[in-house]
Length: 137
Image (cartoon, rainbow, N blue to C red):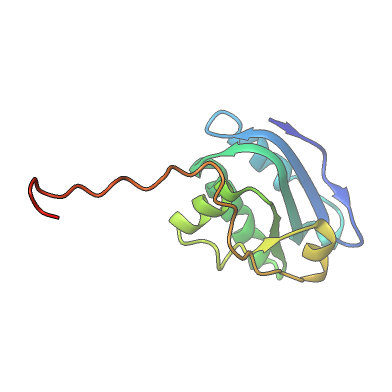
């Protein structure tokens, strides 16, 4: 996992992440999101996940902790991502309402969440053939 230092984007902190976020990298990921900042923008957090190739529930746990921290201080946490796998993970954990998808960091900063729409069906398995008892037809 490569996590660039947070940068300021007009009163928002942006953390851009690449690589994998899993049990081994979650601590570093959390540290970057929760790094102390003298700016009040520390509680307006945009996490750009477009460079992430894999994320498991340990990454989601750290996102949830960061989100709670920001909300408790009057801020917010917004996610930028385009990977279907992240959407599936958030959906399975019933967190899509708390973490709506933003297409760009500018959209996230402005609060312009775009509907996800149907995700590409590429890479999905073909439906299993239906089996019927012998002689039926």
